[in-house]
Image 1: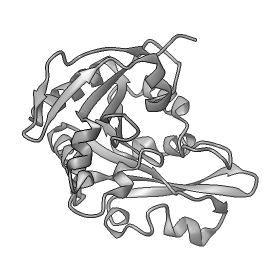
Image 2 (image 1 turned 90 degrees about the vertical axis):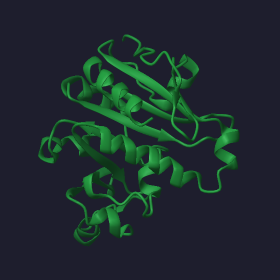
Image 3 (image 1 turned 135 degrees about the vertical axis):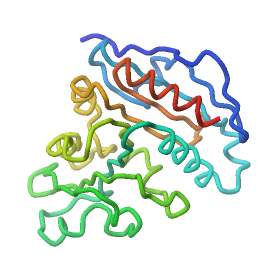
Image 4 (image 1 turned 120 degrees about the horizontal axis):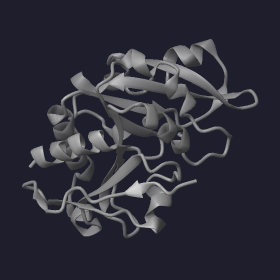
Length: 233
């Protein structure tokens, strides 16, 4: 298997008014944390530094600032922005549980356009998953589900919601003890076929790591997303 290519598409520092965004190479020892796949040289990955851990920690409301970045990207991207999110817990298959969906406790997100599914991850146990369109999302509302790197990620795509029917369920990680809700090998395999779709993952600053965005997709999409990052200055 070939190693996932990494590249540096933003050679300059971008001033945002809050801090600086820097696009850098993703080192091999970081790849396992940010996007642990080893699949194809057709996919490219870009790591975008938002703030250092020190800058993040002095912000009294770091999550609100982070949501502002996501909001700017969603408004500047010429396409659709979807949230893929899974339930934190697994449980017995249930029509009532499926009806409530993964976003039952988040009124803002559950009322947006989207759909929910249920995936068996172990014998008799399922995890709920939802795909929602963030076009009308109020980024000043509760954003924990949007920023939770273990249980959600964002799609930047030219495709409509229906194009992902049957795909999202295939991205859910199997096993009762999986730390991450999603299998990113499965996500990457589908990205190879989705030339107008990329994945955006958000990571808060923690344990010596900078606050970071990671974008994965085909060459053309990475170029488009880089333009979006420039446009949020």
